[in-house]
Image 1 (cartoon, each protein chain N blue to C red):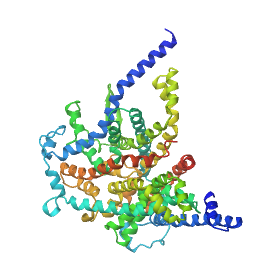
Image 2: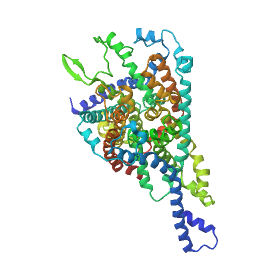
Image 3: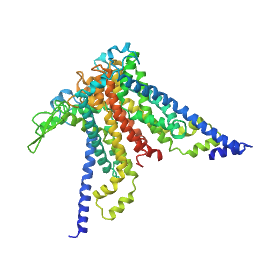
Image 4: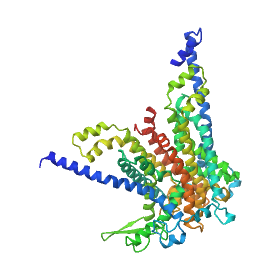
Amino acid sequence: MAVSLQESGRVPGSAPSRRRVRAGTRARRDSRAGMTLVSPTFIVVMVMVVLPVLWALILSFQRIRLLGIRNLDVLGGEYTLRNYDLLLGSSGFLSAIRTTLLYSVLGTAGAILLGLIAALLVRSSFRGRALVRGVMLLPWVAPVVAITFIWQVLLSPQLGFVNAVGTDLLGWNSPIPFLSQERGEITLFGLSVGVPTALVMVIFFESWKSFPFAFLFILARLQAAPAELEEAARVDGATPTQIFRHIVLPQLAGVLALIAVLRFIFTFNAFDEIYLLTGGGAGTEVLATQVYSFLTARNDVGASAAVAMFMAAVLAVFLVIYVKFFAGREERT
Amino acid sequence: MSSGSRRWSRNTIETRVLKALRPLGIGFFVLISVFPFYYMILLSMREISQVTQAPGALIPESISLDAYSRVLRSVEDGGEGFVRFLLNSAGLAAATVVVTLIVSVLGAYAVARLQFFGRRPVEFLFLSVYLFPPILLAIPLFVAFSRLGLRGELPVLVIVYVAQTLPICVYMLRNYFETVPRSLEEAAEIDGASRFQIIRRVTLPLAVPAIAATGLFVFMIAWNEFLFALLFLVEERPSWTVSLGVSQLTNIETPATTLMAGSVILTVPIIVLFMFAERLMTEGLTRGAEKG
């Protein structure tokens, strides 16, 4: 408003009524400029994302195999519930849901726990802190193909460093095929516990790869926290763990919830990590790898789209949670 | 003993224990972050026969760069042809950066500064694209491009990558644009500059570091991308990216040491880029978290 007043001040002989008209055209001009500027982004997103997703929805109600794809009638053909029927009756689908949830929840929890500890450790300054901080981002920055390959070799029964140390120094009877063993046993104090080895390993991997993400967000929040509160508590005789529990943690609640939702979404969607580490074998088949195997190996586009639609439905719920609790607050700042 | 002195002693114990644990904890995190990469470089320089004999060795017996020359040589010369893959990856990532930046700078400016009809729904749309599963998108794109006979074409993949990186770019750039003081733009407007002149002469020059950081971030995403490269390029070996090369040759009879050299080649450019722009990139991502 102030601008348009001054602007009109420059124009000789502008009447108050004209001023209001100018303000109106300015808003309209801004609106037009905004729509023009945003339209390239909007068009790319519509053509490359929104329309394909809608088409995937249609595909999930059709019986389509990839082999006949060249003669495929895009929208026509018969609509059927066969794909969804097939999924609901298949034990593979139900176990993929279970595995996806375990993987997402535990992977998220592991990443947040590691990230929280790391952030608390490097919070106050010490020599080489910037370097340490940068180094701790490596697992998150490095290409997923490279790090999954490194871990495959590290954990390999023949070449792997971990098994070499285990058999030579820790007295393991035989190498453990970490990424291809569905069930193993751990004996602790004479008590045997069954462990889903490969699933545990991919969860560890996910926690390792993603802890820097949590670390970054938590550290940013910690550095914005006022020091006076903690100082006051210290003066009052609160111990470090009490300060953490009653002063630091409550301030982190918001950012922890934000990371939890974001990490859950990303881990739920994740395909690369599991596909590259285990190929979805040994009890690690998640929904994303199942979509892929329906699409390529089993050549069944319809079933593949149906699994993806199920994922999208779950994601939509979390998206709503995210928008409701987080996006609004960001808007206000 | 009074309760006061007991609390005091708990305080001392806690403070001392935590003080002693802190360097250990930092050491632990540095170790888990660095060790796998050290191991990668180590294996890339050992002979495969040495690795099978002594998989636990942490210091190379002798340094050999054979794996690098094998992985880089073209297939005709008995190598794996990674020079070709490097060029593919670099070209793909660079093209993605250019297109994404041009499109997203405009979009981000609009979202940051201008009140326009449909602004909030558009923002919500971009956010949902960012958070939706890429695998869901893979199906229709795979089917469509198979039908059009366009699989195996690198330019097609550029469009897919642009669509994938646009939302996060708009988000990061919007955050930066909001830090450019409005008064500067208003001053230019008083001087009679049009909206597009303001963007070009005032906002963009101020946002150059931010745009560069966002560009590097896009480069990283495109360079690291795996799923779409796998779906679109896997049957065309001459079009493979470095990521695809490492992952596909894992299944074939290529020695692990050679592929470790490939992984080093895949990882080093990204880490170098990241070191340049670490602060800017991470601040762009976590802005907003400070207040949460």
